[in-house]
Length: 144
Image (cartoon, rainbow, N blue to C red; front, side):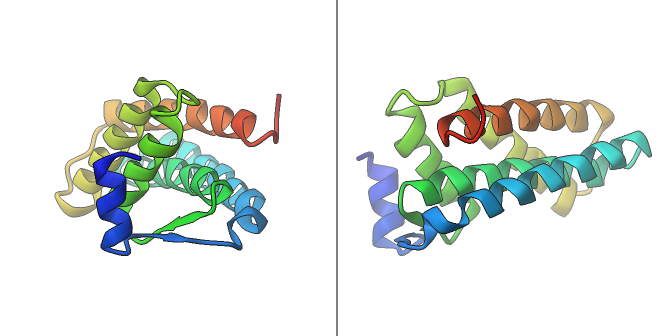
């Protein structure tokens, strides 16, 4: 277990969550819905909205993964820590996938809080979200 994950546990930003496995499919469904919204927003040239929604598609897919391992996050940062500790460091996901999640999180924060967004950023997050959801489904045994 890496030090960042331990710190998130100690600070109660990651908690054991027994009901997690019951909510995996719901989180994936939300993830897919957010991705559809992101794509629709992109078609309407609403790049801020599509960046935010594509990030949340990845957020909910990550939640599904973390829930499947019996944990729940209380911060976006600690969710990324859990993804890295439980899936990247265990070789279930490649390091690039972990970086894609962090990049999406940064682009979402820029769009949301600094009103900095672009067509290029939105495209990157949507593309990453599509790949990420596909990988999450395979890991969770939802799709082969």
